Length: 119
Image (cartoon, rainbow, N blue to C red; front, top):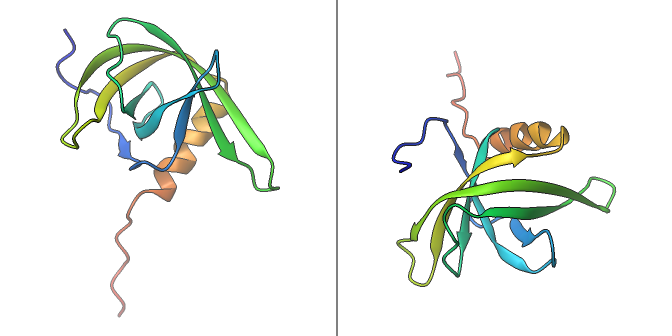
């Protein structure tokens, strides 16, 4: 059974909605993300061990929408501290090459950097 996270992840706090890749219906929101996995926050519990087709729909700089299709395996799922919410951890089985750029951009955007002290 999966017990410890081995990869540092960044919290995204309900910013990016995740959709079912097959039918386009919302599944939940990204909770955190890494190169090899992600955490999803959902209103329903998700089946552990199941493979999911996930779709991320992100706004592009030109006003259009960029879609990321992912194949991911659900490693764990448990009730969140927020009532009627569930956290689920996924290992990515497949992601497009652009996914790495997305992870870097999200980590940079949602990170806090210590500013150097003024002299």
